[in-house]
Image (cartoon, rainbow, N blue to C red; front, side):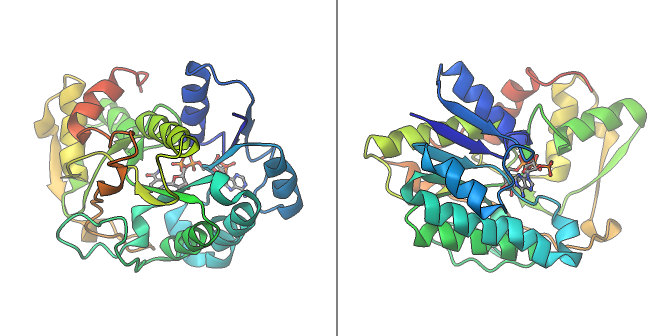
Length: 282
Ligand SMILES: NC(=O)c1ccc[n+]([C@@H]2O[C@H](COP(=O)([O-])OP(=O)(O)OC[C@H]3O[C@@H](n4cnc5c(N)ncnc54)[C@H](OP(=O)(O)O)[C@@H]3O)[C@@H](O)[C@H]2O)c1
């Protein structure tokens, strides 16, 4: 299969390229932003024309920045995705987010739950999802990603552990910490299942099983690193005001994987142990 990976320079994009290289895939076009700006409609149509699978890992990911620049964020996360979706149809595997939901649920959001974003980033991502689904493509919603590339919570905690005696971390948001490399493997497997006729287009949830708070994750990171988890202290989100409101509950259900032959991702805690063995020292 010939693959186009957009956003190939990002945290997930780099892991997608790694997974494909490890699988021995040839014909992979790793399109960084410099190589393919997805807001360039003509370039997108030309790039999509020659490939069998498109994974869109490109996105405006500055959640707080989107509040003051919603049009610019939606140009990338909504309008550009519509062009991709119209060009690629069922060949498109698009990465979306738990932020399309409002976070008021008390049980995991199923794949067909009603979206109701509470911030500008979520509204733009929802516009992208709607375009993909209307054109018969695949949406993979993820959340709370961390990995070896780029800035992310796990790497930040490892860095802060070396700089401070204690770290205050919010304990009033719940989610599924998810290793971007594991998600990359799942997305590649989903494309394989789709090619084999085992996975219908639509929305899938690419998040770890289980849930914890950012505080719980930080304690687990310290424990995995052989540090005292008591150095992490719980606090509340109102101590860290940010421009974009966050959903307080970001746990997603995984029913749609059954029947595809692609396993749902493992529990976040075992995943963290595996992941941290591969993270470089901060
Ligand atoms: N990180 C999370 O916790 C999380 C949670 C839920 C969903 N997601 C979704 O997962 C996907 C991947 O995110 P990530 O965590 O890997 O973020 P990331 O590291 O910020 O990667 C996003 C990539 O998209 C690129 N990009 C931005 N605008 C572009 C454009 N107009 N054309 C082409 N490329 C563009 C960025 O390039 P520059 O760096 O040069 O701007 C960056 O390389 C995104 O769709 C995001 O919404 C992430």
